[in-house]
Image (cartoon, rainbow, N blue to C red):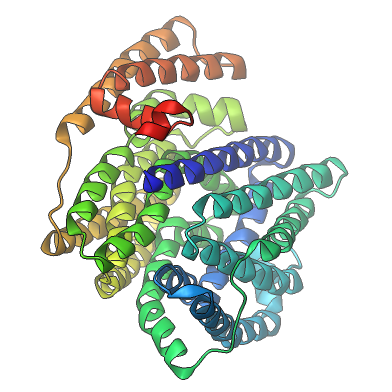
Length: 475
């Protein structure tokens, strides 16, 4: 029940985050065009890529060690060690950013090097704050912090663009969002840093050296394609691709929320020898991680071109959106499997799978972007995610029994097909050529899918069980 409620809190928060980001992206695309949007996304990509190498997996180690710590004092020691571990890579990378400022400014097409250093410090602090909150098993609070930071970013960015700052306003808005998250999150912590011992650093490093590979692989699935498009194609291509990517990412909300809640819970269960509970939780997580992805594949195939044209006023991107959404079937599965591997202390496996697939993703992107540009980037990412998901699932089966609820998943597929028939008929009768028509078509499709899905007894009981009220309290 705790896992359900934690997942629901994070899920609800990320729905609002995605909605705010989605609406903001539509507005910015209309105001600045694909090229302007591409400049901002390139800046954001540079910051996120560098931030991964600053943290080197320490934030995941914080979640793991704090969730299993004996009391506030030990949690404080781990936090103190984590803060000291991120300082050297931050200083090295910041020096590199300033040393190669002309090249970086040329890549982004803005003079952003000092802002990159500032944002790097802020984003590292933000991620560590969220990691501590999750390590304290305060998933809902971490979700609220993410939400507030994103809302501040979007509001500040809109205000600056309206004031005439253009794409520079988006960059400043991003920085303001990071400042807000750090300022709000710091007083929320129950854990205060303490002086670490040598054993503390060893414990954190033993875990983070493998989760660092996991985070670097995150770059392969989320940012490497964007960075290579910026270098090899154009900022306009980056704008279209990122708009499609962020539309597809909405379907991952359930899987990400469940995965974030699953890792510390699995760690706790494994510590107490409750393997049966782990197996049951993983089986359910596999089912509900796909609850948004399955209908989205059908919806993207039918409405992808209309969505990219009507919402963003782009002339292309529908096929890219469909490919990326389809790939989320594999990515959602990978998120659940990887979270379970981390919770069962099998981070070494996650590390090596991610290292291999990272190299493969880079090679595939180089080749496929050269020949197929946007579509090539999407296909490379999907192939990489599929390979990693299958490899990690194969190993997890050696650790625990992995079961799929094929009846529930089949019900989702059937519901999505019913929805597809309705959406196809409706779009033929009333082509979604305007925003109201598109929203109405999507709304009808969502209502049909939701109604059919809730016809499944198990899923209906599960969804009702996590809602506030008497049923949720008794579930």
